[in-house]
Amino acid sequence: MIRRFKEYIDRQHLFAQDEKVLAAVSGGADSSVLCHLLHSAGFSFDIAHCNFNLRPGDCDRDEQFVRQMAERYGVECHVARFETRTYATANHLSIEEAARDLRYGYFKKLLAEHGYAVVATAHHSDDSAETFFINLMRGTGIAGLRGIPPRTGNVVRPMLCFSRTDILSYAGQNGIDFVTDSTNSSLDYRRNRVRHQLLPLLREMAPGFDATLARTIANLADTELVYNESIENLRNRIVQHTVEADILPISGLTGLNPRRTLIFELLKPYGFNSATAAEIDATLDGQPGSVFLSPTHRLVRDRDALVVESLGTANPEQTFTTTVVDAAEVTPEMLRNSHLTAYFDADRVKMPLSMRPWRDGDRFTPFGMRGSRLVSDFLTGLKLNRFQKERVRLLCDADGNILWVMGLRTANQPRVTEDTKKVLKIKFQPKVPTPKD
Image (cartoon, rainbow, N blue to C red; front, side, top):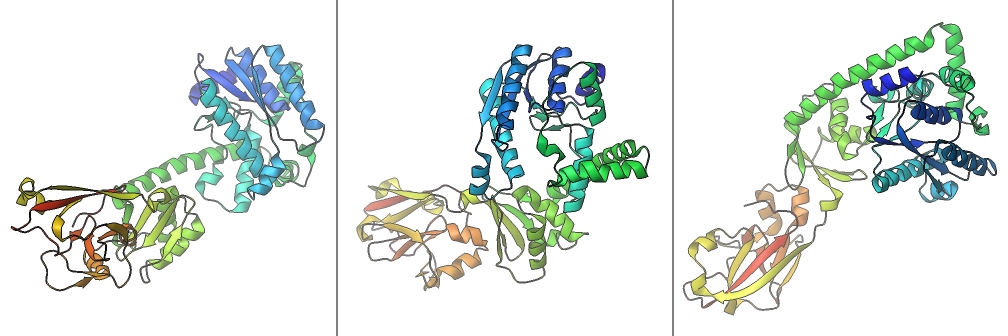
């Protein structure tokens, strides 16, 4: 079993012999065998244990058992104690979700602080089979049917090549002590019902079921690789990346087949789930203007595209600075290229200046034009999307007159003329670049 363990680690490129591993250890049979295998195979490792305070007495017993195990192996033992129920309530999570968040958050912290190459968990092939059926019952795509992968980021699972039977047999042959979690036999949990009721029935109905399922999961994992490559090619063809946002032209989306599924895959990296993706898909055949939010991004169905931006850029800080210079220092070339810098006749500007968002009904006379225009019409004429319009700011004088639709067009008055003696130079400093006129 030690040979198979090392071969699997090498084949999956999980970690090297000279890298230090953090072993996630509960004290149960699986993680106890993991430590024995790591030690016997000559890997350098330390132990991390989480006490979730969910089983009075048992959790403290497990913690003490793991501490003693670390002493026997002569390795460091990191222990975290959590108030899991309190965390779950505060974050509206199930106990299982809360424990997972706390556990992996702690592992991430230890990796950063102590320089471990990876954290190794004791998941085995039975866990992968259980995950397959749990995801199947919930409803899932290909990713949910490939079981548990050998690696996810810095988390590795070097025991996926073993079954639960393999692990218990190894523990018995090598006299490995472990503790038993009483909740593992409770049928109140879906995973336990799959483990103790569904899988035994399937094994009874189909001899060799475990090997068949393992092949099926492997086939699905290969299929996912092909599928993901196709999605990535589609993304590279359709998604246009800009500094401000990502643009998905509607002309490139409407002909997709199956459209809803592919739109979901394109939007998944932005945090949109399948239900929201279906709502977004429905807007392609309707009117523009709808806005959708994910935990990290917002999307607008614009006139001819879906525009996606990070929530972190939704309301960027924008400032401006002013200086007064001699008119001789300002050349005609400078006046023509004033995207983020504007110039006005200083003697004709009533101070102080202020900056504000534009509002419906705002009007100004664009430089080089006769008569006033609605700011809203001016922005529509530039074909700005909704998010770009939201970021537009107006520079106004003390009387509220609009001097500059900042970064886009100055007002006709009070422009610099041949009679100007002093020039007011205003530099706009947006956090996100403004689209050029």
